[in-house]
Image (cartoon, rainbow, N blue to C red; front, side, top):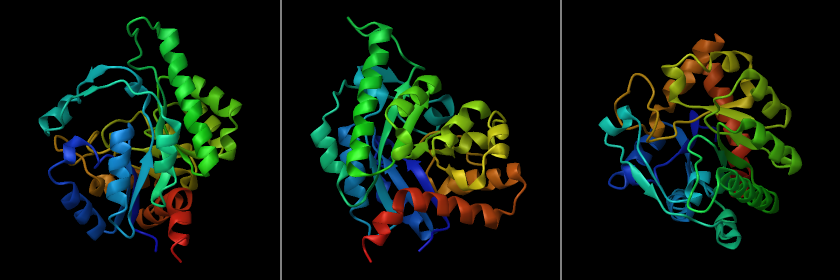
Amino acid sequence: MIPKLIDIHSHINFNAFKNDGPDVIKRTLDAGVWMILVGSQIDTSRRAVMYAEKYPAGVYAAIGLHPIHLFEGHFDAAEAEQKAGVPSYDTRPEVFDYNAYKELALHPKTAAIGECGLDYYRVMEHGTHSMEQVKKMQADTFRQQVSLAREVKKPLMIHCRNAYEDLLQILREEHGEEIGGDIHFFAGSWNIAKQFLDLGFYLSFTGVITFARDYDEVLRNAPLDRIMVETDAPYVTPVPHRGKRNEPLYVEFVARKIAEIKNLPEEEVFRQLAENARLLFTHDIENSKE
């Protein structure tokens, strides 16, 4: 079965959905939209798998350790998200436990390893660790997750912010082209995009493309069969739902905007976007049930 669309990156497993996660999932599946629930620490990764195993199809997990969770910190949602009731959160430091994540990675409903990667947007000194040491810890943790992806033969779900050059270098050194995956919430230039595409990676886009024009050049130039859509719910809610909590059902508005920017029929764009995600993330899972 090929769904209408696949939201390849959402966080129904986060606290923003603790009171109504199953309801959000039900209305999304009822609309013909599938989703991948993405973990950012061991607890949210376990919760993603827990959700995914409850559904015979249409709900999958990605498990990984996000680079911002290596240290303690406090993070506020954007103003529009705060108005929609998306909570701020504190992070606790976590050391990547290869065996614990491997156990989750081997679950039959786990579609990807991540979100993992590099984040220099908030990089700062932490206690006795300098900024360079923090960057090195992020890189080392990311390399371990690349190794895990290679071992379990599942693609990467990559987070990268203000660190594309360093990320590309690591992927080249670790032969990322042998693993593949998606650069989630891509926000780089067309020059950077081409380098990821040359490595065999996909690029995915969020609701931000519905209210910002910074992404148009990449979307116009990137081949339709190498891009995907996501919500990153509960964050970056697309127009016309700005000011509300985001959810996977709204991925349709991201797909419509891509069709508009590329000047292609919506039906064609929806079909290809769903097929891209299915082939990268869920094809093997679905085939294993046959």
